[in-house]
Length: 459
Image 1: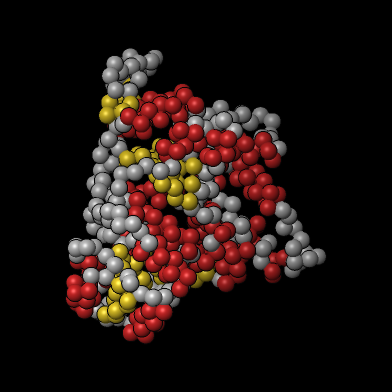
Image 2: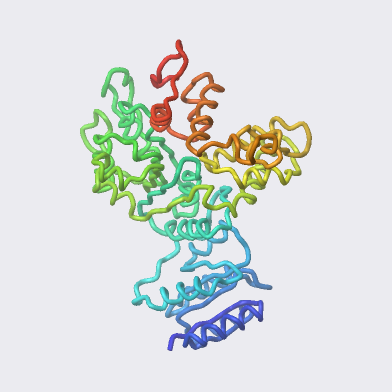
């Protein structure tokens, strides 16, 4: 019979878990503080410890290293009533294998227990260090974001390659930075490269560097981003936009841990962790022959998928409060109230630009506000029309809304007009790459007015 120890200062919660686990056939013991938990774990040698994080005296996080130092080392599931990315990452770093929020979902707990106690005794993952480095504002209480936070903590322990997928604006670079800052290489550099923003002919030099005289204009030796990221992390954003030639060169870096600067006679060692990101379905690109299958599998050793904002509405309020606090600080404003009508509009809107679009909407609204409140009239027209009061003047409550595609087309066209058809500025506001903007303009039939230059990389 597998032995489980529950350490939780909430006696009712601990007793409930004990009764449930006993009914499942597990020999279950309860302790209500860190000292009692360590004593019980030392004496009973449980295969699994279910550990609350916040307890009087020593916390569960402080007890965790002592539990993982026991021989044999027990599996640990952390439980908490608080939604905190940094704590989740720290717990997973120090050896916890799962992280469940209160009130505990019994089905989720049973699945975690079955997975851990059904393990074949493989070596425990070893935490790298207990510092998560700089803190980045990622918030979310949805189940999907909790899984993202747990995965960040797990992959930060090793140097494995990570592929982050998700729509534009979901926060892929924030995830990459969080992994870097929770890793053993947190003191090293974090170097980000947008593979779609660099002209293809210059990308190789940008990534790998060049020697003097390698090409016209190469007046001196220039290290590339891989060299600059030595001892740290290189983040390759929009890797799906790479040309076949660059894909082959990146594959060599992953296979042999080396790269050759342009004009160099010998390769250099690649000593940087690679984290890539994509807003396109790379498996579909592989099927279409547009992306190398071998590179795809090399990149996605671990995949972290960020869901779009429309699929996690329960995170919206936390995101608004977090972003608003940062905007207040940046603009030296003092917005202390948000009308309920604003939240209603936010909840009904589809957010094609995801968190980046939400931040942009808040930034503009705060800049336009003359008081201490965000009101409906400060929002863009496409959000205002979602409000019942604003729509009441139309024949029906849904009149004027149009399809999602129509709204997206109108939004893209409006941004282009507002930026005087400057593609770079439009991409920044929309949170998309130039190739994607070109595809959207083509698909939606958005044509610049006569006299405006076509996209030549400068406009």
